[in-house]
Length: 116
Length: 113
View (cartoon, each protein chain N blue to C red):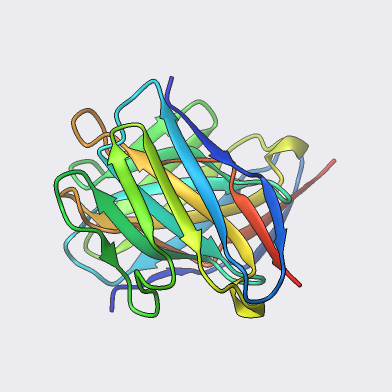
């Protein structure tokens, strides 16, 4: 079955520093990877959608300068939170889908970011 | 922009009863509607989905209904069990690749023994 591994599960960083999270798709080809954030008491906001052979599309309020994403192949993606501040805390999820076979977005376990 | 509204923020039912969670969407081009479950402190787990070419789908104790005219879809959990307790998120997106999945705010379902 489709599995998405995301790591680290938790991370704590000092205000103004950066942290990187990674996402690995197992058992299927991640033709698209979506990065979401769930801030405290909120729903899931899309940060950006990365589709193979297309430019990465960032949502309003999120930029490549702040959340650079790499999607070098059909099984791996990473995202960095640069210069993290308190408002960046939350649960970050990567979701991967293989458009060739299905429409279901499968999510990794998430990376919970705490900023001190 | 496109929105997905989830009407019940909390829902409490007794074990064995049915639970119904309702969502509406604004984008008439939406054609794919998945449901996810989030247990405390955990990630999103895919539960069931429905596409706009049907109006009903069932998987064991889960039934999803879609009313395209009303732009409304709902999740019915029958014969609820305590382990069904979680936050349930509905979502909607347009059909083709490259389109984003928009989530509702979530419904906290509590199933009491």
